[in-house]
Image (tube, rainbow, N blue to C red; front, top):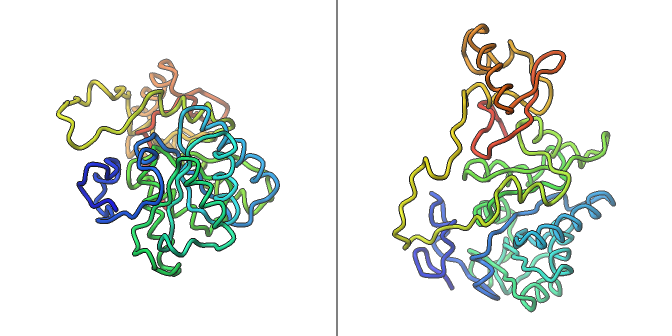
Length: 300
């Protein structure tokens, strides 16, 4: 049992406005302190989603991350199993009490997670039932524990997109796996990419985007880090934030940024020379991304 502010309470959760006061944990507390990537997606995973969910879970473990998910059917279970297959740590955040693992067919998987050094986590009493209202609420813990959230497969109306929105609200990065055109389970990731989520095709890209050796600082550390030490200064951030991965016309950038077109043209030229964007027929595209730059009008 971990209470807010106790020594083993995850420091990354303590900074959240809606941090859970109490966490019940079955398994190793050490896994909570590892850098984590959340992997979420559809309960009805396709063959494509199953394959790449497994591959990314294995790859993220090899990059030094723990894999965090919600123990649900489909993508969640696939990613937990992938992390276990790679002899890594995986954490499952439940929408029920620890004594009522849901779904019941994942009880063996839950036991394997604990046996291999991972943990089951819940903010609910041990005997709490898996009520529908619990699952959207537990998503904030999944994203809050993690450095970033990877959406593997999801429909447009999906709990995975709720987790992505929560991640953005918490200042976490959102990654999305591109899928086949026409597959409803690819519509969610594709929409996130259009909104500025990072498109990734291999686990190493996530590690590169996040940076190596990134750790959460505990609340009792006295070290002060200035913003100038940890942030790359961005030129014309308000303009850059509105250039997407698809071709964005100059007038659209100007309208989004609320600036005159001639002024935006000069800023775009400097951004191109600095290597942030590239000029293409019809406008500009983003070729370099900073984790703290996001489009200004993202509705999830």
